[in-house]
Image (cartoon, rainbow, N blue to C red; front, side, top):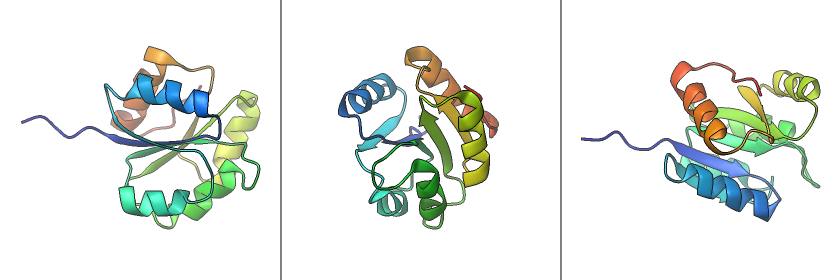
Length: 129
C-alpha cells in the first residue's frame, strides 16, 4: 500500500507561475492552487494541506500576514513556506517575523523545488533558498 501524497497548497496571484508550479509538483504531490491571499484560511481549514507555499506580495494582504491568520485554522502539522523573488535576507527576516516555517526563492524551480519541498516535509526543518 502506498502512502498518500503530501498535500501542497500554492498561493500566488501570478496565474502563469501558479500553472508552472502546479505542473512541476503534481507528479509528486497533491496540489491545490489559489490566486489570492483572501480565502487562504478557509482553504487551510477545509483542505488541511501539509505544506502551504505562499507568495509574499499580494495587493490586499501580504503573505507574511496571511501566515499568522491562516495558522489559526491549520492543523498543527501544516508548514507555511514563504515563496518570493524578494532578496533572501529580507525573505528570511519576513519568515522569522511572521512565524512561517521556512522560505524559498522563486528562483528555485523544477527538480530543485521538488527536492526542497520533499526535504522540508521529511526533515521538519527550514529549507533555505
